[in-house]
Structure formats: structure tokens, C-alpha cells
Image 1 (cartoon, rainbow, N blue to C red):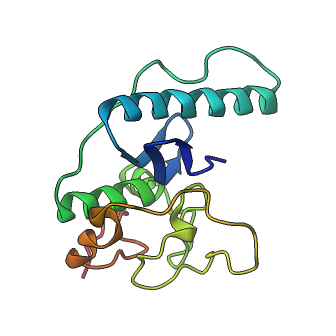
Image 2: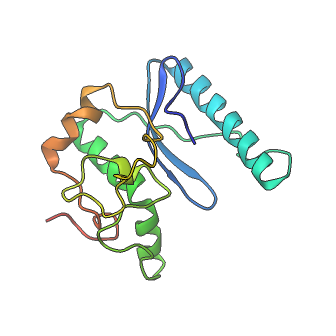
Image 3: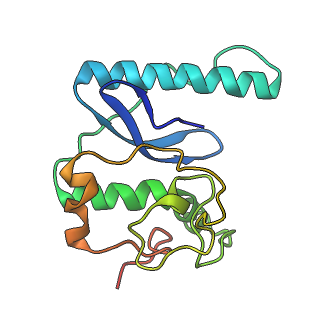
Length: 162
């Protein structure tokens, strides 16, 4: 869906698709690369969604919220937030979790993520295609965040790691 690297200097490393917005963890070589990368990605996704839904017009608001992640702990917290966002929303709204406790959100890059404490039961092992994202290039996203522990599959649902 995302194709990983949309443009030189901009890569989508992790994502989560929700009903009315998308969360991304990206790497960008500059503020300009980030801006152009997000814009290009939004255009590509809007074209595909409009074609699929047989409609036209804007899909995304003309804005995004960006935050630079500077420390291993910030990156780890962002990974939990993005990869477990669906569980977290359901827990806060009092809904039962729609996912088994040993599964990653299928509307995220979670099934392909290699930083789970235990691998999810829905991890693609049957050749269902390559990950929909690009591999991380920065130390923080490849290695640094792991200093604070691997992620638990239910951690984002109001539970603390333990």
C-alpha cells in the first residue's frame, strides 16, 4: 500500500490505518524531504482510495502533525503508540479488544515488525508479500529503542510492560 520509500530522503518505516486518520513513523533527511514525502504519500493514497471507492475529491486534510523523535525511549513510546493504536482506542472507549492477545493489528505494519517480545500469530510467514514499509536506516529506529525492552502485543491497551 505505502511502498516504503515514496521519495528519496523519505521512508515510511511503520504505520497504522484507523477509520479517520493514519499514524506514521517516517525517516526523512530534511524538513523539505519530510514535507514533500508526506504530500506525495497523501496524493498517492487519495488517488487509490478514491478509485477504490469510486469517488473523487479530497481525502485528507491539508495538514499533518509531525514530531521529531530524539531519544531511544521516545522512539519506543512512538512505536507502541503507532503499532498498538487500535487496541488503545478500544481500551479507552470500553470496547472489547477485537484482536486476540497474540495478534498484531492487521491494519498496521505490526505483523511485519520484528521488535515484539513474542512474535504475533498473524505474522506473515506464508509468502503473503514483502513488508509494506521500508527498513529503518537510523540507529534510533533500528537498535536504540530496544535498550528499553521489546514491545508486548497488548502493551498499548492500557497495560504497562512487565
